[in-house]
Image 1 (cartoon, one colour):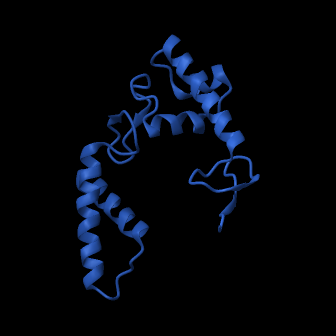
Image 2 (cartoon, helix red, strand yellow; image 1 turned 180 degrees about the vertical axis):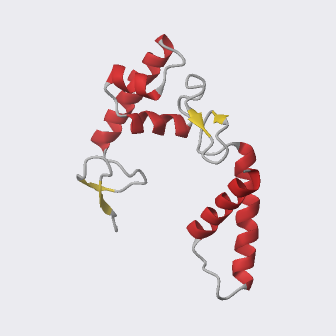
Length: 139
């Protein structure tokens, strides 16, 4: 049996990769962090990420990960905003409207790059182009 050995993204420890990029110890620690944040938000609704982080000593990036994953949607109203238009969102990185525009713009860019042999097939370039196009159109 071929096993994939990687380093944990959090602590760097060598681990057997099973689909989760962090080791068991870091995963347990993250679950503990989640419970602490959840309890804090139950007692202090509408707290900012900075307030939560200062009160719980949990890094802001970990708290934002929970919010972006949708784990704290009901409790974390107002913590996130769309990275394109700035409208408040409950989870993810972009609002549904901007996501739809991105998908349609990316689809068009992909079709064009398929026909044009000189165009780059790098997805990140077409996504950035699409995001810039949407921002310019709105601005």
